Length: 212
Image (tube, rainbow, N blue to C red; front, side, top):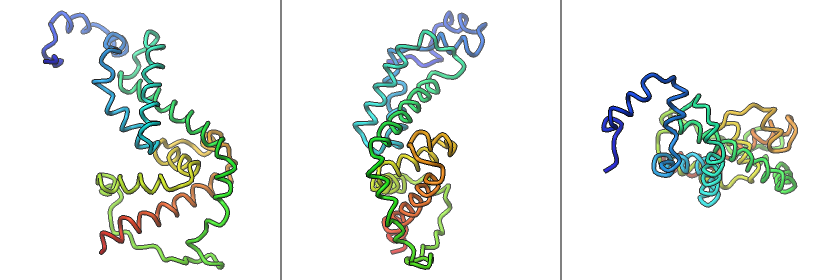
């Protein structure tokens, strides 16, 4: 049976009690336990952003490899999991950067003719539903997350990446534009259209079904 922290020998406690937070974190880094202790959490983190199981698994594996290369220089300023998540986040951003530039031509075409929610006068062609749900409560619903993931998967790849970097990673506009390779003006357009497409997808697949 795996030992709980309370079951650790007293010598372990005494050996770390006089250390700083960073020094303690450095001593507690244990690569052999990463998969058991953090594997599920890291995978969920990656899958939520990438919407692809195989790619998410690859990103987690790359995170382990990167951490193994650098764990001896780990300063201990954050917990082991926070450190691994920071590595994974950089891996995901790098993946977005590479794949977004590869899909530049395809996604630029997606910017044209995508204003299907509006008529020629700029008014709603399809009036949006009145969302009566509290956004915070929606995000706590597993079923809603599944629908949102499906809707994200239907977006052009670069558009989905842009939305994810803004809303999940909370990056600034300048950094996102550099990662996905578009101007700040185009970034605003891409984000706007991503939100409109997601809104319509959620209305069809979540709100209209719930109303029915």
